[in-house]
Length: 333
Ligand code: KG4
Figure 1 (cartoon, rainbow, N blue to C red):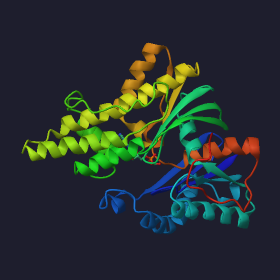
Figure 2 (cartoon, helix red, strand yellow; figure 1 turned 90 degrees about the vertical axis):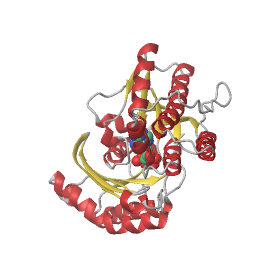
Figure 3 (spheres, protein in one colour; figure 1 turned 180 degrees about the vertical axis):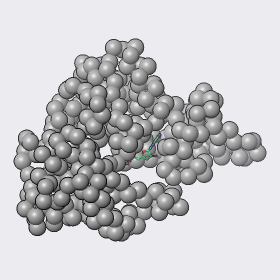
Figure 4 (spheres, rainbow, N blue to C red; figure 1 turned 90 degrees about the horizontal axis):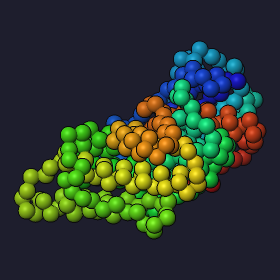
């Protein structure tokens, strides 16, 4: 089965073609240069850029896969969560193609794409598993029972982990997106330089909160400036990163213990973070848990994961109807 995947939930226009589970093409038009001057995604600019890019990106994905639109058996497009204006571009484009060409189409939850993105790599996990999805828009823990059945166990109560990386990078004037900048700057830093707070919340809670941490970094920076002290950027980044990673790993392991699950999977942009991967690898090894992370190019938003998740959903539920709408909050769990 040939599947065309389309993703436009935030600031990346993406299309991919899969032949069953085999990736034939994976095209991405990244808008970072447009949004970097504002230190974050500007929704209206994102939608307008999607409108310009969607057709060329889909054409390129078909060309690179060496297939025609008439060969496609299923069109899968991100239905939500995300920015409504951005989602509408890819979703409406997919519905129009489906309607005109008589190809079945399916709306896919972006979170399902991230939860399953690890299947795009050669080493695949077995169900059930605990999935930590950490990106610019979410920090959530799911129990993935099957490729179409997910239970939400915990989520952020305020800022998402990636959002915290982006906001802290902005206040440290490190550029956008902040995650990669902070992780690069942190490489030679001391993670114990500042003991930033970890929001564990209630003892058994699987929810996250990162807004206090962001404020703690701001307070530290202001105090140093007031004292005319030099800012130890590398150490601040390493200490901040350690505080985020510590909580993400700790709560995901708690979820695995609580639900007696022996496999952990990560996904979303923050799962590209080398320190996060290292800590997961070490702690999972110690606790006898099998750990799986997607290849770096499938951590951030991409259409290959949407095509994959769409094919799994389609095999159980069949096609979506033409009157379906997009949504801003995940409907999983
Ligand atoms: O999944 P994604 O591409 O888009 C969303 O759906 O949000 O994730 C983007 C987020 C950004 O907040 C970015 O700063 C973060 O992922 N990110 C990272 C790293 N690479 C990307 N955060 C920490 N460390 C990284 N290496």
